[in-house]
Length: 295
Length: 282
Image (tube, each protein chain N blue to C red):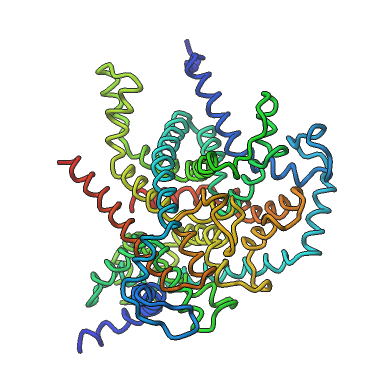
């Protein structure tokens, strides 16, 4: 093929990336799909069992609990996290010069910490009796709460950590979006007598459209795969995970437990596909909503 | 009135400052508290010393020395640093080689290939992590450095970012270099790479942050204590049955936080710009 020879330098230069991409991205997807129809413990030969893995998962109690927790978690943490991040971006944007970057950097500190660390620090802040939070509540005469062992409060304790971390990340993206809004728009609105609130609703939010869309989609996708934080907040291991009565059991935790605790790799692979289908459906739904709102 | 008019001190301004400072305290306080727990005498009751400021620098240094001397922490530090350094080197080299071609040249199959790679940004890690583990395991790479590093090298995000930057290189410069007799690789090395140095630095920093904070992949691939990363060691210190006192655990946590916090102090503008770019151009 002449074109192949002519472009040989091109193919040689992209080869390392493409080979690794095929080996460690495309091949795993295909092999995962294959395993999802097999019963496999990683040692013996995989045994074809059709849709049994999927059936077992959809009927399992842990799967239902993990999905239920996930629904509650996403419906609170995504809107709350975005609202807080947007508020922080407006707040930082209202300062200028040194103070703007000071506050921006301060709000960004939780993002800089390794993800696993946020959970481990907060586990101690939440600790009963001597933990920082209970100490502060104690000053007001409120008795100690075991935030991470009380099934009513556990998910909110997780959401608080989550917002604490994600707010700074999304804020920075919003701030970049705010910089791209021409100042004349606000000037014109002010001349028309619009107050601050009206300017936010009628100029800032619509002009942030694409950025807002990215933040929402990205937040949903990463929230659906939440792992480190609930895993570490509950002090989980592959032998025992999810916290008291599975109140902090999430799909990826459940999947990892089935793979590395129970050694059911086929079932875990099927889990990954079910989760991916859910994520793709949600992503498509958000694209559809965007298109519908535009027309 | 010759002096520039100063902003008036309204109720609104006061509230704004109060809110900004309060949020700053909430954002930074857990980290500050962690430092104070480390740098105070162990066993002092909270009622006497609420750990709101550091009280004993010597006690903190002693705890750090104790952790380095008596646990596998130093080794984990080495593993994590090597893991991060090799990942950064690989992602930058492999990504920039491919980005150079995707951004500046035409070849058969380019569009489809690039579209597939960009589509992979949307595929959740959840679906690939277990088959990737099984592949790594069948290669005999469990508990090895290549097992940690190699599966993460083809970074679609890195490629995307570098293509954006390389695309801005004027074609005239490439042509001029070619007329001067430079080979294809020499153009990449002497023209394209220096021109996107900023993007490479930003990508290196983001990759460092991500690799240092990666918990899930080392947890399953590096299961032997001699291959533990900092994240795993910190996890062990925090495990319910670790029988460690809070000040020792916080020392372990603080040591894990120091490299990324230092990076942030030095490179804050690049980090923030890198993240902003991923959101506004993505």
